[in-house]
Length: 279
Length: 325
Image (tube, rainbow over all chains, first blue to last red; front, side):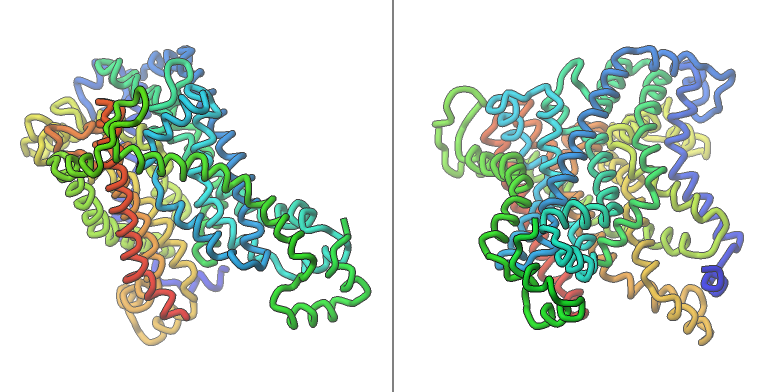
């Protein structure tokens, strides 16, 4: 690695650092404004919108943390995201396995079903979906009612990313396991699953973050105590539009979990996407 | 467990034999086709069931709905043929929405491609804090549209917002109604926020693509005396072609489906200046209970997206597979 890097172009002309700094400022500026704005009073915000907290006000954040609604929303978001992730990844890897490791006639057409699925946004089907979930399945305003459709819409990308991972498992390993008397199901469970963990994590994080951030479907399906954080943020900001500092504190706290998850998983996600791009 | 034909025949053999068996056959395993079919069905059924129920069925219902006048209650029996389509396609709010969607599609490619490429090439250089920079640049992409939208909504408040403050600070006059409240500026403003939010994905994909450019190519061009820019222009960017085309595809699909950010920032206003096809159909469906109209709008949205994807696949992406194969 070191010898390779030495030869790379580059390095640090002042212009490059200036550009990098500008990019960072533009990227993080709004996020920092939200986080710092939560530590200011509305009066401070009105006097100088871009200033720093002076003095630091902790009331906004403590109000949010002691607000039971915030915790309801957080629990709902978490449970829905977990169900979505587990269902999408489990069903996804199961579907990707024969598409990667079996030879059969309709393999590529079956794979095309999932590729085509990428083209169907939830928005297209949102109203019939709303009718289906609330009337036909009586799952309106429930965790599963949101999580299952979300998992269904997350399946195409899951399958598309996981297939190359499963294809990359060396044939020899599979054959060795067959010789040792393993069944195909056994191979799936004890060979394919453990070896595709990086892909499972990538698709899992994508499904989780997608669900955590989702807005449209929860907007139609969830009310009151069942709402998720994005709905809570949107409603809070319209209901308390005069309390800018409160809105910023609420918003900042709501963004932390997805951000933490991403930052801890970042390398794996990038690695997983690279695997998918190359495969 | 081990009642598999091929496993049994291969059992006495060594790995070498197995390899020979494998190369001789197209399919490595010939154990009962029925068993294999059963296994495939077993593996694929949960995913297909879920998609049939929550993806295919609702879309089919949307198509059916689009031929009826239906307010959501009672039986769906007032068949109106193509009349909903007629109304949607002659509704200026909807045709404007299509224009807005395509404006975003084109602006995204024109602005985000060079910008994303520039940042990706920059971050591919050996500079200090590169790891931190890479992480930071991706942060907006991870945030929920709603959360990013609410923060930007505050930043863009007329007069009291930071953006207006900065603009007055350098001696210019911000628009009276605010950037989101002025019809001529609203769509452009939404686009700026979208760029802030989604540039991270372009950068991530481009950086992933750059890492697969062989180091030797850079070294060779360096030895030949090429400048940094020449190397990027002649080697890195052309090799990024497939990645760029994949990103452009994702970006186009996203722009056609745009909803969340618009809904939070403007709700489609002011004076329908920022409506998209998705905000239109949600408005018609959940706001006014014109389910037939909403159905027709969603079919139009899907057909446009599908034709675009197909055309892109045929004319742009096929080049990749052709040159590679």
